[in-house]
Structure formats: C-alpha cells, structure tokens
Length: 202
Image (tube, rainbow, N blue to C red; front, side):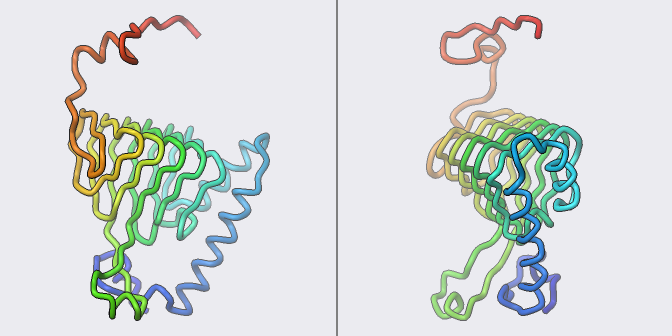
C-alpha cells in the first residue's frame, strides 16, 4: 500500500494487511497504557513518549485514551492535559499546541469516508490533518471533524461539533460550532459569570 495516501487526502484502503498488522502493534501498546495504575505516572509518561510522534514535557492523559494508531500520528506540545476518554482518530496527523486542555469525551477525527455508498461498501477512506493551537480549552464532549484548524487561546464550548475552522482568541459553541464572542476585557476580571478573579498563592 502507498502510505503517502494516508497523509495527502487521497482515497485509500485502510484494510490493507500490512497496514493492519502495523496498526495492531500500536493498539497493543495503547492497551498497555490504558491498563496502567493511577500511581504509575512516570511509566505513563515514558510510554506516551514512545507512542506519540512528538510529545513535550508535562503532558498528562487520563486513561482510558483511544487512538486509531495509538498516537503514532499525534504531535503534542508541552503541558497538555486530557481528561477521560480522549479519542484521537489519528489515521493522519493531529497537532496540538502547548497548554491546551481537553475535557472528558472529546473526539478529534482525521478520517472520513466517501458519501458515495458504493465506495464506502468497498471500504475506502480519506484523511485530513487537524491543527489545534496553543492554550485552547476544548470542552467536554466536543467533536472535531477532519481538516479543522482551531486558533490559539480559543475556547470550544461543551458539546460543540466543529465543522469549520475557528479563529484564535474566541469563545465558540454549538452544532455546528460558531464564534460566540471574542475573549475580552470582561474575561480579565471574571472567570465564571459574576465570579471575580482572585488568585491566592499556592
């Protein structure tokens, strides 16, 4: 199989025997990661460095974690946090910037299937990469579809379905996800509704 097709948006057959054999080995490693104990933090971090294409320091992923290729095509910056049930359909590359946070049950998909039923019946697939910027907050239950770019510092509200690119420095919500407002002066004073920001020392 021409593996370049996995990464250039062309139609390809993901059921190729050699590809599935390689994929299964990654999924075995992912299974091992999900079976680690909560006290085995260092073991988890070591495993993620082996599993991911790139992963910076200070990243934490709460098992269970799901990924089609076990993270092989995932590029994480530093200090990224992911809550339970992060699903990365990483048939091609997923890029996530530093300090981004994922709520529980987030799905980031790079893979799609043709609308034409005959092609789906034959098992064809295509993939487009996803880019998520630095210091984003992806709320619980968000779904991000193939080919999407989300700008730095942006908040995606819980339950949103992101079907179009979202710019930097905004709050965006809904299905389909749309920009609600820019991050503004009010956000410098209030962290939630009428709750003022008062930071005490750790």
